[in-house]
Image 1 (spheres, rainbow, N blue to C red):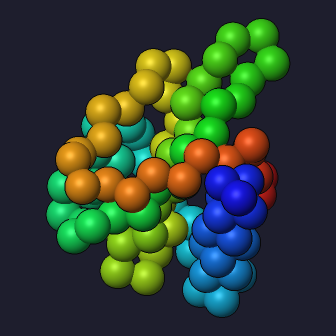
Image 2: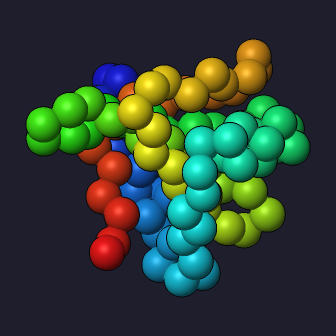
Length: 92
């Protein structure tokens, strides 16, 4: 069931990206600032990397989708709803 929820959340954000056409890549510090502005954020997380692990995060705010990737986990504020995904695909 958790995998279904992650897939649904990922699909919803992907659909939002297609509809708006806007994906904003930010550094982890800026991502944390954005999270602190969002009331009850839904954050999609995934681990990636081939030679070393990276942590990926995606959140929607004011109609834009914000993405960051970090070598270390980003501390998420309390009250965050987190959905773990197998992967997050960000178009090149």
